[in-house]
Image 1: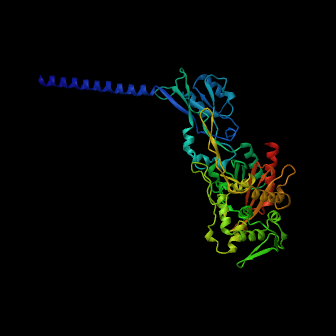
Image 2 (image 1 turned 30 degrees about the vertical axis):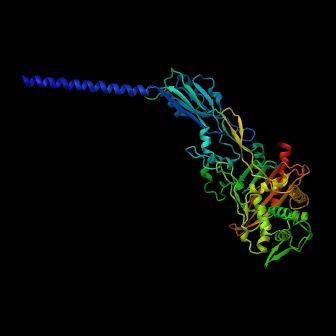
Length: 528
């Protein structure tokens, strides 16, 4: 009897424990189901902070994209069957899933209350200014250019666009309840304003292509402020297909406008400035086609020489012996000092450590004899500089002797689009007015009667200088690679724009780059 009572009691206890366990599991399951049967949030789009040009025009393509949020209703399904043939999308809707579809034609979706088109911000797909802007990786972080060096700023000032909706335990949308579009600063106007003018950028890039610049660069500066109005490098790369250019031997990811190259005869204006500022006035010189120092003979581009030649004609015809002789008279230390006033051999920092190459400025103790000085005086030897640096030199001559560090960032905007300008670069007075005027007159003569005539136009007067620099580098066919330059400003009377063009593997600065200068200048005058 006792055994029966004991077994009965044990059975009752086991059944009670099972009941408690079942009730507990149902309670937990109910909580899980309840947590799933709630509001779901789905990301529609992510936006980084804007990049604007100087006129607050977003730098992007003009094609407007849209995201369409489609509720899984019979009405939406019926409408979609007449629009798209994407079986996956239709299958998702029939199973009750919210669908987000991107399109550039929202009109097909506007007549159905269960489909809501939302404008997207396409602020990173401009075909212009590729090397300045850079690109982002798969995780949305900047890899190079502005995208890299201002990455944290863009993330901070960006935003997201989301949709919140009610869903069942399996995550399917409950169509009898309204969805909520959440704008988490997605449409705010915060961003960085560049000094670039997008219209000038179009003019520059088109001219470089028309001029058959396959490898090279171009820069346009505001002569009075040295703000960078346009900047381009070739070859370009496709930001939407980065992998396609990774094996390109022409190195399209290098920004050649910010990279240093052998300079050649455009440096003669620095030698001239050093001479004039140290009261060593350029005098007449008898050029017989060559000049020798310390057993080293330097040849003129005119093999039989220019004969008796003055400063204006020497610069216009780019007479090497004249400037070698002038450089030796001026002395290496004076030319180096003048180069430092032009900040040659220094990187240009555009903020957040976004910097150009520094180039190479030799030290005074490297000059062991007059031959070394003479070689440097017309821009040869170890000396290298960037197109931005060369443009800044010519701006200084054009604006009356003020060196101004070139700038790329004009300011920022807040969420309402209100502009806050960055502090202007300091103006350093490094040349006297008579020095500038003497060099300007010679540069004008270069454009009208010298090596720069390919840029001459009936519509403006300009001051310019050409260069064809030897590099000591050779291509696969054994031909020496020459770096061809054309730098100058216009109009002479009141310089507004400074332009510098570089062609890698060219034949001569005048013929390769002069017509590009002319096309840019005339398009600025007539179309800008």
